[in-house]
Structures are given as structure tokens and as C-alpha cells.
Image 1 (cartoon, rainbow over the protein chains, first blue to last red):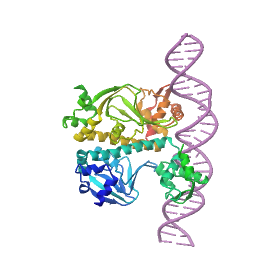
Image 2: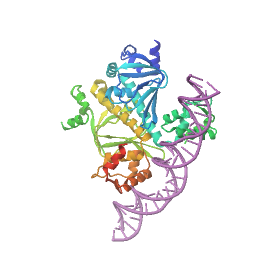
Image 3: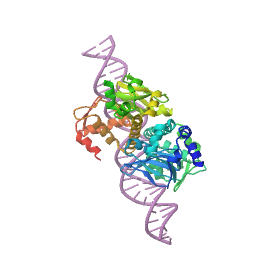
Image 4: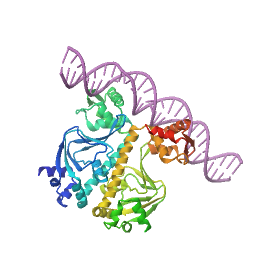
Length: 221
Length: 221
DNA sequence: ACTTTTAAGTGACAATGTCACTTAACGTCT
DNA sequence: AGACGTTAAGTGACATTGTCACTTAAAAGT
């Protein structure tokens, strides 16, 4: 079956859970499609499903009182919503908000089924734990970057990870500020400096990398 | 038995795991004592036990290349080492370092026993997940504070949480900087300002709160 | 072709971090 | 008790980042 193969490809750890432990994920879960821009959870929400993202991307972020935001992480295909999972079990409040960045296809496993799988399948537990540990490590890395790394470095890193010399990045300075937990003006200034050095070319809603090596050199300490 | 009661008191979720699921934690685990100042893990270490802290406190932090540090969280009695747990399952590298702040008494559950418990006891799973979710939420809160909250607020908060008018805080400005992910000079300056306002009294290695309400007022937005 | 909306620029200033020191307080060893 | 080494804290100059109150410019809507 097509979907099964897709799932196994995206979540290799579930392979064993499906084949050996007799876990029939497709039968007990529901495939859902969520349009772009949908808030899938925010502070205080209660959660009823374990979500596996098959396609698309979800942005998870917090917002300060003054409106400033910082992206905590993205969930893309092959990822699961750890925060959701956490609340599934410990019934805590969400400390963040999740919004789909694109149309998202996901597999929703209802809470009771999730708990059954957790009890029955070692492989399933492994999958769940793995995404947990992963997220934890990424969050710690984020704390590290925010506290220690300079903005030009973080910005250059973002640019290199999301574009290249012939594939411009389509985003606004505001979105970039949110992504890096900074302020728009600061991003604008920094980008302008990059442009003055001939490393990027700026236009409304678009950033073109013109000198990959110079940006990469910034990262190399 | 004395220790059993202590454990049940510290880890209420394990109650059921012990009483109903026939989990004999004491039999299969080892009580260990770790002297103050011991590094219990650092980057790249491998982990062989699930650790439940019975007494004392562990400081978990990351270090930047330039030597600056930031405390990610503390594990005190009733806590378990989530990072350790994570690596127990996903075999990733530690992204941080853990050092005992005091003498620590802990219960070490060997990996195979841990996995057995995870398979057999819903209550045990709940306990493990709970500490995970907790940590995740605290880390997210930390990201939020670092990115959004001003230093005077965070400092005042720390002072109020760790001291009061008649119980001075015994720590150095350097330790405080590490705790808040800032620099010593910045902490010194800020404390000096508090002192000038008559809110605290400073001396070498000691901070006395002299005006609780003024500090508290800072937090109240 | 006009308004409206959204994106980006600007300058002044405040907060925080960095650097290269100096000064002060505390142990400890004759 | 006085000298010495160690650790804690202070200092001023400067760089980086964040904030505010705007202006300018580009795209979208009518």
C-alpha cells in the first residue's frame, strides 16, 4: 500500500512496530490534511492525538507580551509533535503555539491507541523517545545559540541553510527576526551589511546569495 | 522500609508502578552517593543508567567556546536525569554537561531494567514521560526568558527565589552570570544598581535582600 | 491612477556583552 | 602579625543588539 510505504520511509523506527508487534497504525489512525496557516495548538489547549507529520511543515514558537516572537523549531515530514505528545501524557499546558507553514498531511493517532502502542511495542516506544530526545537536544542547542552566538553568524547560517547562489530565499525581514529571535531592524541592518559586502542581493521579500563562500567563512569561526 | 517511603514521597507516580505492577525498584537498582563537584556526564559520554535523584542537586549547563556558560536547569530531589534517559534510548551525544552542586544520593536503574520497566508498567512510563514533558516545558520557558525578559527582571526573580530579607544568598557574581547566561560585569553592574536603590546589600560572596517588595515590584511588570 | 497594506530603511538612544585592566577581600604560610 | 597568592568584584571604553518613533518604498486592491 502506498501510504504504508511512505510512513515506513519517513519513520523507519515504526517498521518493526508495524511488522513485528502487529501494530496497525493505518487502521487505528486517521489521515488528516490541515491547510496552511492553521493554528494547531496554543497555550492551554488540550491534546487528543499523537501527530505524525507526513508532508508539510509546522512552525512552533512562543510569543512575548510585547509581540516579539521566536521560533522554537519546525516539524517537517518524518517528525512528530513532541509537545503534543508531552501534553498527551502529562496533561500540562502548552508553553508555545504551533501553526502550519504549508498545507500539512498528518496521521493522527488517538490517545487510547497511542497508550496501547506504548505498552505493546518496544519499537513504537523507541520512535516516540527518539523524537523526544531529538527535540530536547535541539532545544538545548537553541539555548546555546541564542546565548552565545553572534547574530551575523546565526543569520549567515540561516541563509546558507535555506538558500544558495541560484535559489533565492523568499521571506521577509520580520519573519527572519522571528526565526532568530531578534528584531526586524536588527536583521535589516545586518542584511544591509551583507549586501554592502557583496554577499547577498536584497529586494522586497527576497534574499539572493551572491557569495556563498564569504558567508560560509563566517561560520568557520 | 525507610528508603521505599522516601522514594514514594519523592516520586509519587512510582507508587503504582511499585504496588500494582510489581516493579521492585530497590531490588534492581543501586543507591549511589556522588560527592559535590563531580561531573556526572559531559558531551559525548555514553550513559548506562536511569538516574533518580533522592537528595542533593545537579547543575546541567552548556559551555561556549569562549568559556561562557549558561545553566539549563537543575535536577533536585524528586527529579530524574532526562538527558541521561534520552541518551539511554536514542544513543545521541550529550549536548551539555552535568555537575553535582552538592553531595548527591541517587538511584541508578540499569538500562535493561529500565527498558523492562518501560514495557511492563504504565505508571513507570508515566513517571518517565512526565519528567520529560516537564523538562521540555522548562527549556522552552528558558528560551522565552533569555530572548525576551530583561536582565534586571531575571536577576530580581533569581534573588527572590533564592533568598529573602533574613536569608542572604551566598554566591558569586560569576556564578550568577552563569545561572542567567550573562556576563559577570553585567551582573555586577546590575547588582550595584540594586544596591544604590537600597534593594540589596552586597559583600564578597553574599547578597542580602533589604527591600523585598521593590524587587517583587519589578517582576509585576 | 488612486488609496491601502505591507515591507524595509533610518537615526537616536538604551541595554547588554566584551576587553583589558585595577582594586579589594580572603586564605595561608611563615 | 605581615607578606603573598588567589579569588571576587569594580571600572571605563567600546561593540553589539534591541527599542522607539518615525519615513520611504513597493506591491495589492479598487
